[in-house]
Image (cartoon, rainbow, N blue to C red; front, top):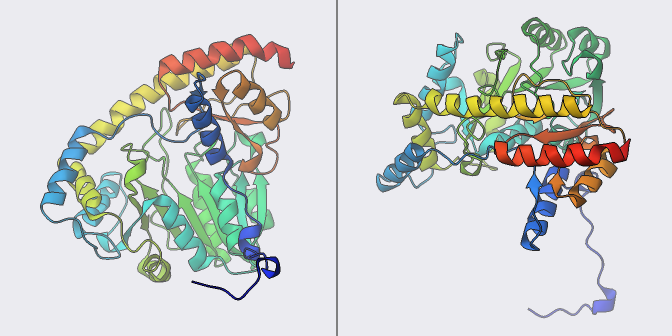
Length: 391
């Protein structure tokens, strides 16, 4: 196709203002740094990615293959196949929550769900409350929707949000509150009474609570509480973490029908539907009784890694709070987090700097223990040897 415009006259195409305010994910950047190092022949231990290092269980693979052969290779309803909606409903009923299958919408991973909800409920110019530290993407969603972020620092309360602090900054301008427990990047689990109080406060101000519960099956001594049965709460979850299915993209939303309708308006033109064969494989895994067997085996291994890493960090003299869930630690380091991460990346260990997780995290790093115990031991040995040099 020819053009009459001289190359010297071409204008530079400028991205939209909403995306110009957003940077690419630091977590992705750390992943790329690790990959590049490996390709160049360097030995690298990557403790930066939030992804289980376990392979998807073979039974799930077999069920997916059988589903493909049966024709589960086309579009499904925007809400997902009926089997998986019923299976998710059963999971929550076993936990003591009343979740009707009609309250469930399956999405292309939890990330698509979060973006859909944000676009459906975060009004331009409104305020969005995000406790810090918290999952990086929440800040991105707020910026995309051109809202103002109001952060609450949780560092003095073992990274757990307090309802009183939420109440102090609540106003009619607040459209949404993001909650994430078990938390990424800290592994903290919020108290049940605090969560209930936050949902009630938000209700008083006609605000939506987005409760990201993607790590709800990965917990140790403390069991997480779900806000799933509050009318103004939208729960986001999925199977990426609990079943080691990050690449399968099976997430879901649970909400009252009047909240699902606005989300559907975005989902139908964004994700459309999650892969049919993957939906069927998950549904069959739940109904045939393998779901909790898979989860239990992974959590047992995560606990061993957590305990070893926590003890190692404390012995080195690093200030860290013991995680109650997920597979992350968020220790405080003696120098700027980016300098710390850069130093250890040169030594062959990849961490994630804390700053992108919100305000007050300049001296924190995120360490993922979703890596083999052998790799964790090697990384902790490097940390032990090199850490005194930074003091």
